[in-house]
Each structure stands twice: as structure tokens, then as C-alpha cells.
Amino acid sequence: MPLIEAQPDALAKVYAKSLFEIAHTQGGQSNAESILGEIEDIIEIARDNRSFNELLASRLIDSTKRDASLVRMFEGKVSGLTLSFLRQLNRKGRLPNLSQIATAMDEMVQNQFGRIEVDVFTASPISAGELESVRKRLSDSLGKDVIMHPYTDSSMLGGIKLRMGDQLIDASIQAELRKLRDALLNKGSSELRGRSDDMLEN
Image 1: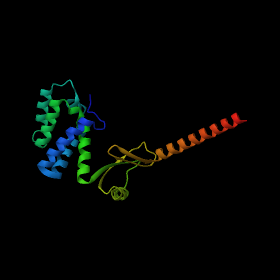
Image 2: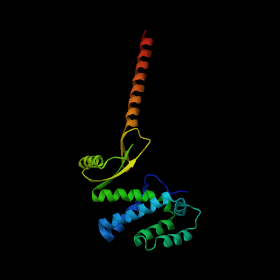
Image 3: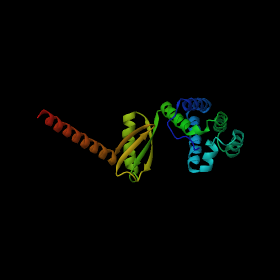
Image 4: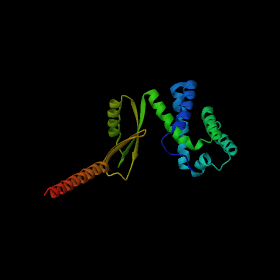
């Protein structure tokens, strides 16, 4: 089975809180962000590499063998705290939840340090000027330092979609067309109901 890609559950938030507090106590904001970055890098590797994903998430792999693999792969390449955390998750059978834990920790980092990361989706690459304009408007509106991550979605007809954590702001052309379609359908239903009422009254 692959890593679980879903919104954090209660247990994922507990692990994330524990890691965040230890990292912050050891080295403040920069250390907390660094540890989170290492975890996110490991998750990206797992997403791109099926074998590594299976190593982290498969219930069929013996935890002792997995632990040895984690040490061999990451010792000296990531911080001691990150490696210890991965090994602890392995012992508890929670490595498949690594992505959920990272998502929960990311939200904690953002809330603690007054910043928010926003995924920006457009049909074609957005220019630096347009991206900065969106960033500034969001920053002024939210009162936080906004970090933008632009992505191109070729399935979009146009417009823009913004994702902040589990919140999605959809201003794409598809969304506007859906609203128009729903409005027309509702209008048509109202007209049909009106005609039916008239027929019954007559």
C-alpha cells in the first residue's frame, strides 16, 4: 500500500504536535521549518519512487528490516531528529501516515509563525507579476506572510484556483460554467413547477 494521502486525522495531529514541539524547543523557528522540510522532501521522494514508497508504507515488510534500511539511507543525510522520528513511526506502525503528519505539522508551523502556503493553479504558467499581485492581495486579506506555489493545470479552461490547507477557492472558468448551469437548471425547474401549479389551478 502507498503512503496515505488524506487530511490529517487526530492521531496524525498528535504525532505532528510532538515533532513540532521538540524541533521548536531544540532550535526555534528555523529548526522546526528545517525538520518539516526534510520530512516533506522524503515524502516527495516516496511519491516519485514506487519502491521507496512501498518500503515506507507496506505492512508486509518486517519493521526491523525497514529500520535498518532507514538508518542506511538517511543517517548523516538528515537531522538526527528526523531520522529518530521516522524510526519511531516505524516501530509504531505509523509510517504510512507520514504525509498526513507532515500536513498537520505544516499547518502548525504556518499558524505559529504567521505565514501560510498557498497552491496556485492556472491553465497556463502565471507570470511573476501576476503571482506577486495575487500574493499581495492574499497577504493583505489574511494578515499573514503568504508563500505561493504555482502549478499549471492543463485541464482548466482559464481562471485560477487557490488551495490553502483543506480550503479550496475555485475561480476557474469551469466553476463559473457550473454555477451558470446550476442557475439555469434551477430556473428551468422553477418554471416547470410554476406551469404545473397553473395547470392544477385551472
